[in-house]
Amino acid sequence: TGRIRTQHLQQAKDNGEHFAMLTAYEQNAAEIFDQAGIEVLLVGDSASNNVLGNETSLPVTVDEMLPLCRAVARSARRALVVADLPFGSYEVSAQQAVATGVRFLKEGYAHAVKIEGGRFYAETVQAMVQAGIPVMAHIGFTPQSEHAIGGYRVQGRGDDAQRLIDDAKVLADAGAFCILMEMVPTTTAAAVDAAVPVPTIGIGAGNATTGQVLVWQDMAGLRSGKMAKFVKQYADLRTVLASAAKAYGDEVRSGQFPGPEHSF
Ligand code: KIV
Ligand code: NA
Image 1 (cartoon, rainbow, N blue to C red):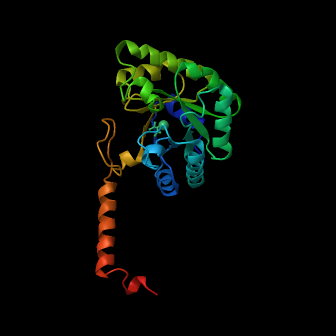
Image 2 (cartoon, rainbow, N blue to C red; image 1 turned 135 degrees about the vertical axis):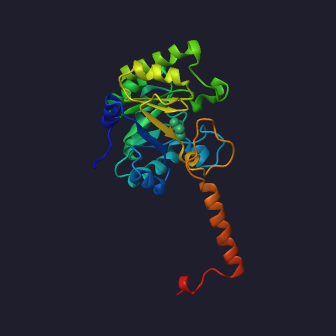
Image 3 (cartoon, rainbow, N blue to C red; image 1 turned 90 degrees about the vertical axis):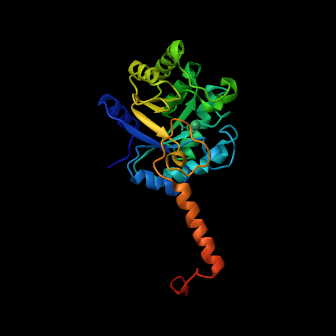
């Protein structure tokens, strides 16, 4: 099987099928998810608060993300690799966005990029697509705008649904190959999906979108603390890893490891 490309995600939508996306930030996870058949790997700016120890996605920089992106792209044989453009690396102008997008394709080996924001980014999306950079648009709750939005709040409730529908239409018209929606009521996400020809991806957006995405450390139960309502934990890696580390430490302290079978 060859590389998943943007047109394969479009085919999924056209055929009424679904596809899966997970975040990935390094080699092992990328290899595992790629071989497990996950169609899209997102080198999310969530690396900031899942890998680099920050509290939010805001502090991560392009220079910090590029090596992570390269690692994922080198490790994924089949998956489409999408990179988040970090906060501050695309908002200033369409020119700035093109320049940053080029870096992620040229130096990060990404196949596409994702930016956060609605209709005001139409010109930016158009310029990037014109430059040969496929763009995924992230609407609804956009974590980089946490302080402007006033916290983690569901977007597109009631009368506000039309705003998201209009944003999605404008972005799709501008050339975005996919619309990602975060923390949006199921009915609103369904209306957005019906309003645009391109595939949609949801996180906390119900089951009517073409694709779904989760942060892998949330999905696999590696992360500590309270999970958002939209997270489903498919494993308990934190417990598995903690008991492995404990057993190793105990065996080293007691002199049980290394045994003759691990020695020269
Ligand atoms: O950075 C990220 O992980 C994301 C998604 C979960 C959509 O943007
Ligand atoms: Na992100």
